[in-house]
Length: 223
Image (cartoon, rainbow, N blue to C red; front, side, top):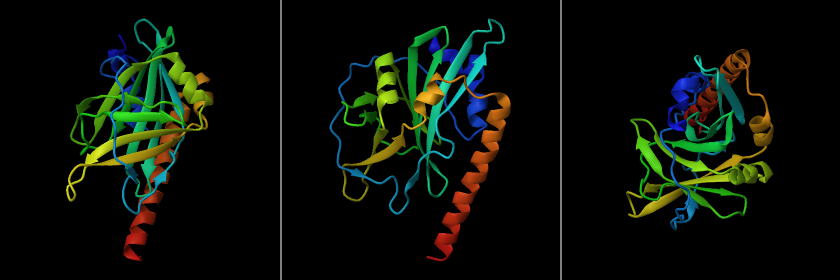
């Protein structure tokens, strides 16, 4: 079962090491139609989205007992203030490449019922339901077919959309987060990063994140 792969293959440790956090929970059927959502607004007023400090990355680890390898391909979108906006991850066993779990993480304060909507270029959007919210993040998840992965490989941009309540006007505000698909195919089809490469990536990512935070602080102090 893929719901236990994160713990079995040590993905959580690898992802946390570069400032990410992903753990599959359960597989969800993918025949739910996306619900209509309001017009989109930027993730936060006045703050753009940096398209992934480290791009698309793949991590693979063997099971310590069976030596069966599991992999995760992941991207994290970061705001200019260094905060995470969204994370997209696809996980699978190398022995079962067609059994793929798509999971996403967004900050808390979202409307849960509609889930997260994904759209690759001008293709039909798909909805991914939330499975759990923790103190600092909410996760959504579903099982996807290889056709969706092929769509990502052929695409140029993935739009991740979710809803937040509009406390002033009532109703909801839609947040659209653009995720580049440049580098996705190379990461998905590649061998994955070695532990040494993962450590180097962690260091570079943290340095870049700190630079973003410092730049934002300077802008706030000297508008």
